[in-house]
Image (cartoon, rainbow, N blue to C red; front, side, top):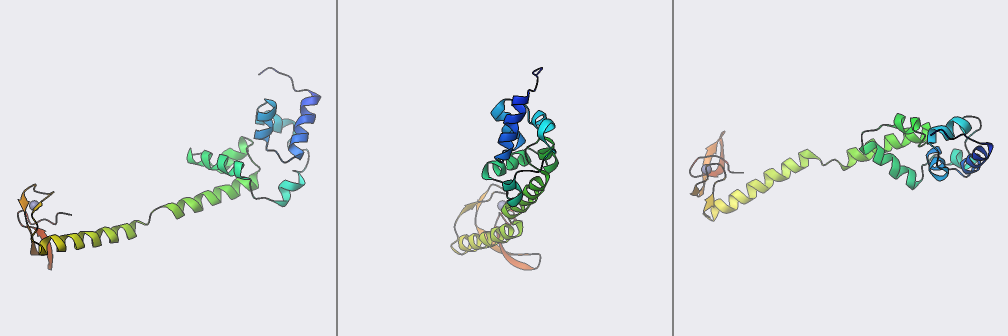
Length: 164
Ligand SMILES: [Zn+2]
């Protein structure tokens, strides 16, 4: 705060920018805010050749962007804070949403598997006449075959509920 940007600062920033550094990284390296760096050297020249040829963001930038997204920020924030150019921000935002959706567990599959597991275990316990402690009525009892909603199902011999 209060420091004055010198010609040397700007020269140094341009050098780093030519190497493909983001404004954020240049700021960190030279102890200036990314906004200040961008104000002086942003927009006056095309981004370095390397950056235009490979819109793919480097690993460090991807990690940074995904952390920001996790904290609730969006691609516009990344551009505003000088973290990356708009094309890269947009691409990273789309990738993030895509991957998030992919890693979300498929609830339908889990539901079906739970249903199967319940059926399997109740049949086994019922047939074996294993004594169970019903989680619904908390009584020691056996599972018995009962007609529930028109179907024969193994249910608590005491309260008649399907225990799981
Ligand atoms: Zn019960």
